[in-house]
Image (cartoon, rainbow, N blue to C red; front, side):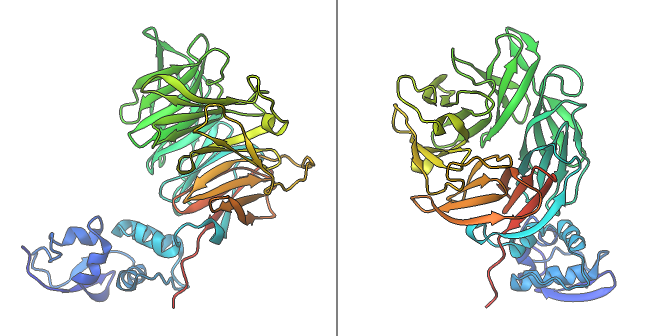
Length: 443
């Protein structure tokens, strides 16, 4: 047990600060201050009357005030990026993020800034990171940005076009591409988000032989599995499953006759149902296929296709551009090129689409510029992109409640939500926008 001294004195870069152990306890056990105290937040005995820290004193004053009041006030003479770096040193970056941004709410999002792309016109995908950063796929490159939106060393695939990317955690990114990723066989690899280094490649084995394959859409499960649509040269078309930790292939769901799993545009893991949603969509295929795969029973437990299988389908159903499962509502939402939302009941074996026209913007007219409808579900709200804006739908009837729009950059080709931010990638100028929820006002 350390000696109880609630008052603590610091010399930070030559400037004296005095506070209490109670205030420092607000930093949490994973902070630098947590390491200075015992389990009861008494100082560890080292005989020092004051503790010297060779860091920026102005930033320390801001962070100490945050611990005292829970509020973040950044003076004009303190650069935000410098403060964020200092917060990272003290283990307080999560506290700074929480204080700077309020709880994510699509109806309260405000534009926070833009980042210009590196290769105009070929941005294909953006993925939000778990800590508020993001990665952007540009041709054969993946540009990585941390939570301070500073760019790290890019990931290069040696001229192989990126098909999808996803975050394992804040330090690791999985990238899918065509057959030869870097050197050797395999179309998927795990990379360091900070250095761009290839840590290992994921292989597909069939009949005890390693096969070349193209990896497409990715998805991840909480029990450390990676799912990827795979397209091989012979008969290994389907969905591959790998262990995130070891990189070893643990399963493969082979494509059933007449279906299209190896060319899937969208994968989504459904935690409650323990199933994987697989969607192959327009315009990659003339016919759309959506299914749920149960790997425990190795079977397709639910499926829909706009071929109809005897049931009539509309033109809108043949132009489904994205799909997302909403487990709490036991339904799948789809969107067409007019931003009409459609809903399918997962409890029905004879699935049909119930279309909602209240979201329609174009009134049957094709847009003059390319549109890339995408869907996302976050915090009980549904998000759909259309041309240069993202629409937000709320409530049990999914009523349109707000729109996020910027006039610069052209159509939104992709967007992603994570780390309390929404990132929107524009197609024409290859710029991505950052949207954040401001903190509540101080009363």
